[in-house]
Image (cartoon, rainbow, N blue to C red):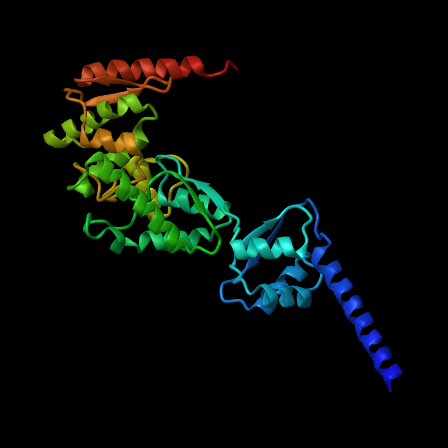
Length: 333
C-alpha cells in the first residue's frame, strides 16, 4: 500500500512537472513576428473571448493558459485596439492589456478643412466611416446651441488640430473633442459673443488666403463690404453651397454663380448662413480684430499673396497683373 502511494505521488509529481513545463512553454515562449499585427478587443468581452481572439490573431499560443493566467493575476484587461509588432510572450501580452497600452491613431485636421474633408481624414485614419462622422457633424448642433443657436451644423466649430483617437471612441466622441478644442481656443482669444458672425467671417478669411499676415487685411475687405451692403463675391462660399447641394464638380460653373443657394455671395449680399470651414487661430483673430483699411477688393498675385485695392479701377489693374502673371507662368507649348 505504501509502495502504491509513493508511485501515485510520483505520478502526480510527473504530471505537475509536465503541466508546469507546458504552461511555462506556452506562457514564456515568445510568439508573433516583426510585422504589424492589429488586434481589436471589443468592450464587454469576457476574458475567455479575449484569450480566444488573441490566439486566433497569433499573439498567444494557448487561450486556456492565458485564461488561467488571468485568474492567477486577477488584473482587469482593457478593451481596445492593440498593435503587436514584435515577438512577445503571454506574460508581456497580459501586462500590456492590463496597462491598457491601446494603439492611438493620429488624425490631422488642417486649417480650412470643412466637415467633408474632416470626415475623409477620419476614415483614412481607420477611425470610422466618413458617412457616420458627417452625420454626427450635421446633427450635433446641440453641442454649440449655447454659443451659436443659429448654427445649422458643427461646421466651423471642429477646430483644426492634430488629434489622437482610439478605435474604441465613437465619431460622437471625436466631434466632441474637436468642439471642446474650439471652445478652448475661443476662450483664449477672448471670443465671448457673436460667435455665429465671427466664426462665419473667420471661415471665409481662412479659405481666401494662405498667408497668415494677410488675414486681417482680407477680413477688413469683407467687413468694409458688409458695412456698405456690397456683395462679397467669394468663391469659397459658392463652392460650399455646391457641396451642400451635392453638385460640386471640382470647379465653379456659371450655373453655380446663378444658383439660388444662400451661400451664393455673388447673388446675395451679406454673410452666408454659417461657416464654410474650420478656421484656425489666425483667422479667428483676424475676424475679431480686422485691420483698419478702406480696401474693398483683393486678388491673388499668383505667388501666394494678394494685392489689395480701394477702388474698382485699382482692382482692375491688379486683376490684369494677375492674369499676366498666370500667362507667363504657363509652360510653353
